[in-house]
Amino acid sequence: MILSASVRRLLAALTGLTLLLLYLPLAVVVLNSFNTSKSLTWPPPGLTFDWWERAFHSAGARDAVGTSVEVALTATAIALVLGTLMSLALQRHDFFGKSSVNLLVILPIALPGIVTGIALNNAFRGILSLQLSIMTVIVAHATFCIVTVFNNVQARLRRMGSNFEEASADLGAGLWTTFRLVTFPQLRSALLAGGLLAFALSFDEIIVTTFTAGAGVNTLPIWILDNLFRPNQAPVVNVVAVVLILLSVVPIWIAQKISGDIDNLR
Amino acid sequence: MTVSTSAGSTSSVAAPPGTAISLRGLSKHFGDVKAVDGVDLDIADGEFFSMLGPSGSGKTTVLRLIAGFEQATEGTIDLAGEDVTSKAPFDRDVNTVFQDYALFPHMSVLDNVAYGLRVRGVKKAARRKQAEEALATVQLANLGSRRPGQLSGGQRQRVALARSIVVRPKVLLLDEPLGALDLKLREQMQVELKQLQRELGITFVFVTHDQEEALTLSDRVAVFSDGKIVQLGTPQEIYEQPSSEYVAKFVGTSNIFDSATSSRLLGREGNHALRPEKITLRAPGSPVPEGTIHAEGVITESIYLGTGHRIHVRLHDGTGIVVLEQSTGGKSDEQRGDEVLATWSVDDLVPLA
Image (cartoon, rainbow over the protein chains, first blue to last red):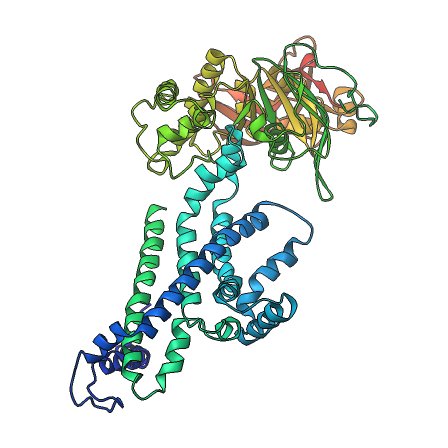
């Protein structure tokens, strides 16, 4: 489509403004992690690496990162197994109540976190009489992590069709052999994409976590919230935020590269 | 064996020895749709058998039932005398060549061909050797290291064949395997398929909607319509003696005379079919040979086909007929508007049910 010069300039300006609004705050966070002023005055009176050093030695921050990684990895692992099984069941087999199950599986991602949080809190403590711990957080996160894996695998299975699996069975392979040699290799990139998303969802989840975490279980988002308004900790929080920005760019980049590779193959 | 009680079914008749596949009262319903509706069929060992019909006639569903991809609603499937009706595809000694080939995209061509051997536990060196031999059989000896995505349609077709024959099945099921190929390649593959079947001595069950393909390749043909077999016979029987108007029209082209036209034109009761190439056109007033029926008319259209002409004639009683004239080398002198005398032998008239 051909656009007139003035329209093109207008659109370029709008695009620039939108990107600026999105990324300027992030740039401020990055700059503030080097700000010599504790109260983050603007513009920064000077630059320093002090906060980075303090953040690196902060036991609270390091523990929180460890907890978050543990929660996210375990929840993602659970989601990968259950999500794959669920999408295989719903995409390859017919059974009574199939469409209801389909809806129930994807519902957790649409439910407000606060509802999920209260419901799970009641269920864990009231009905199951469990002590809230890191395990309860993992289970809670897995409920919505399953959805991202499920959606990715479901879409891949649909696009794949059942021809390859039929061909494999036709050549004499049993169910497990077919999954191992034919289905799984074709699901790999879908599992990676779904898993990365699940990991990211779990990693910055705060509402459900607040309701399901036991005493002393501090995930990174909870630690940040606790420390943001403590006068001495604000610059350290900025450092952690910058690390998180860097860490979240990597999976996105990988995910884009994977999907790009897939497109090139087809 | 379950015996269907539906009237007119031959369910209780046991399959003769040397039968590769035996279907009895086979039905498959998808909801209210009867995709396959009471099929009885025996296919002999080493036979090249075709299932012919338009899309939706049930031929592919029968193939999928034999392969085990669909569960029969009613009836039984015997392979070499063994009831496999409720067995999984991997427990049946048949292999399928899929319409879209279904080659595993993440494996090399050689690994694709060796797959059936691999899942049977054949050692790596042995299965590589056998897979290479199978690739040589289909003339792709040096393409083993490629991916399926790097091959042409015709090459993929051959890989799919090699992958199926490497495990030496008793029966090979082919689901419109040549449908995606262009005409030249299709004709070449037809010849190769026929040769391969003769060399291997495997029973071929070939599904196609292409009547010419079915006639040229097969020992026997089953014509399908609405989930039923409407005629079963050799290609010659199917072509020369179609049992119904449906078969006469679907297999080749036919002039169909309904009851009224038959009695007026032929002096006979009932519907009749007449192949266009059985009709001869002569100049009006020519002497008419013994034992022929004749009628005068006007040429309404003459279409040049390369090998001959397709000529449309309107007889004086209003009946339109199509005549196929082979080219004799000389220039055809019949033209639109010419008066002609159409003659045909009584023997070439096929009474229809």
